[in-house]
Image (tube, rainbow, N blue to C red; front, side):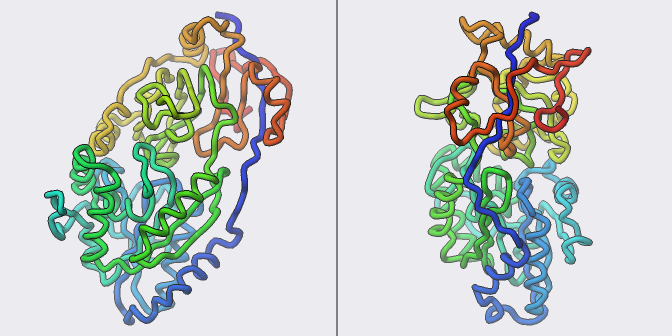
Length: 423
């Protein structure tokens, strides 16, 4: 096939609240809880560090460490990421290193273990697991980003409550909780297990993080344990308003340069691509409606975890070469989402992939296809749109058109550069 859609670049305009001085805001928020009254000099404080690519993660964690050092405590960092990193202690430590979360930068030990303590039996009849190092600490501080979950819907989705289960439950906890969710519901299991953990595991405080549509820290809030559920409800509503989105609600083909666990729990954010409720298609009331997704690579920070590739119909062969199959399968099966590890149709070059995908979109000629090309689902402030959107883009005050339509920049080998970074 010789004719492809021409593309033009746009810059999206999202609401952009932003924390300018992140360490100062962390200090201000934690100070508002007056935690000194609950901490004796020399006590240990375990601080959770997750596996998501949270903006300013290392800076935030260092500020938390500094706060508790000033109170005379002995802080330590605990990887809280379920089965990520291949479900191994060293794998999880390596993930934190990739985010610059190290003992040297943060100024305290990083204690990584997959061992858990079973603190009780949940009402639903399964064991409640909790990280051994965190359980042995005098206090636990839960840090996490509040955002819509990629698989589940409710008043509480991803955030502090989920960190109490999936993060601090480690691999064993994550496995049993995801099994329980199959028989009950995400909302019931989150509340059931979190209530047990809050009652039994010395949770001192939470630090909730909300990001804007530009992958920036938009809000930080320190939360008392008894307020986790209510504050998460409110913060989740805010996170939904601020989250990034695609500029158009229908596309024949979405090209994604990279997916990874640092981007989303499902490699690509299903809320953004319309694959949260349907398998390879959007549910009836879900938007956007994307006919096909093509993945071009994995992030370096995901370290071979290709979770989410199975949500796409097409990919470059290099994605499968970069994939660590055991790590990917462990993560997907632990989360009860084996489909996310399945293999799309793969092609050696972008040209071959486009030649396979575009003729299958329906009666629309390939050169007239509605195509969107993004770096990843965290970074959609600038993106490429095919000429089929040109007229609609003219009337959009939230879109700045940066150039007129021009040919796809396929090189002599039939490959594209990286969207918005190398072109």
